[in-house]
Length: 169
Image (cartoon, rainbow, N blue to C red; front, top):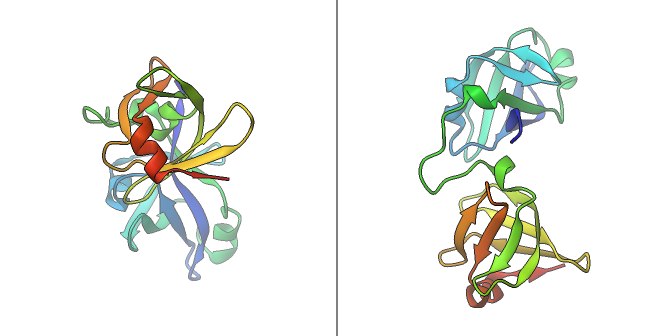
């Protein structure tokens, strides 16, 4: 398991006082308020202020970032927290980092590919790479994912339901 987990990504500076706009990977931007310390570019920082700005977006004030120029240097960086600083997910919930790399299999045991990305949304979108290199995307809609076992490295899907919602690139 990874020692650090990404909880947000810095999109751009916001205003002239050093705030940044961030895309939050948590259920709510409010969740970021729970972290005493975060890591940006490997440096430990304190979040001074978290202002929600819509679904999965927030404006953040970060200790040591006093103006727009300093905020610009953070553009594109991940905001991470130590695994020991985060709560265990609720039953049936998982951290994205723990699911990445899992094998996608059908209930019948057919191996479909390896999970490469999860795009957070109201209904998360999973992307896996097939053995032939093609990419498949599907929403985690009702009935698609039957079971997730990150410790075992497997995500089991219902093949019929997957065929209804999947999109191949």
